[in-house]
Length: 131
Ligand code: I3S
Image 1: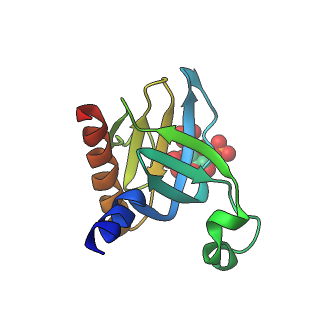
Image 2: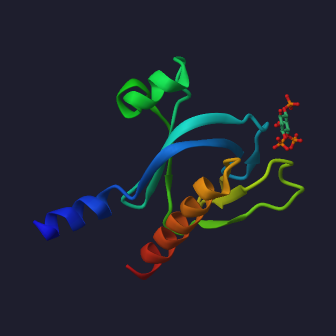
Image 3: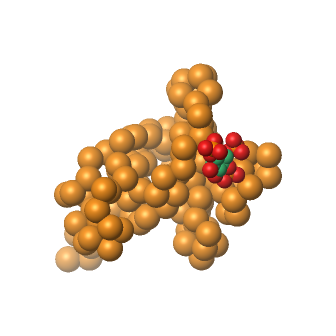
């Protein structure tokens, strides 16, 4: 039914492969270590799965099954913005700051891929703040 489809749509907001690095953990600066990972935005939570040891093509077939979550980020009270040049020399870098004082950089060379993530994450953050 339509309401079921709507539920499905809302329950899995977005998924794909992005580059990410955690740069601050609860106020403590970490060494930047970029890696590519399967990323899922669902129910107000952003989950970065561990880098698959397999080739990216096999990793893409059953990514959620073959890998384990490395970071689960609650978007309640988080902020997202485009990172300044000082944060990274890469293009299209998003800076995600969580309520517990952690920071992630999220990146993709393709603007067509990263722009919808920026939109989805900022919409989720706004949605959570009005709930
Ligand atoms: O902010 P930084 O220190 O310039 O970040 C770069 C480093 O993490 C670098 O690794 P090494 O510390 O092993 O040199 C990475 O390879 C670079 O990708 C990082 O810079 P970008 O501008 O790509 O985020």
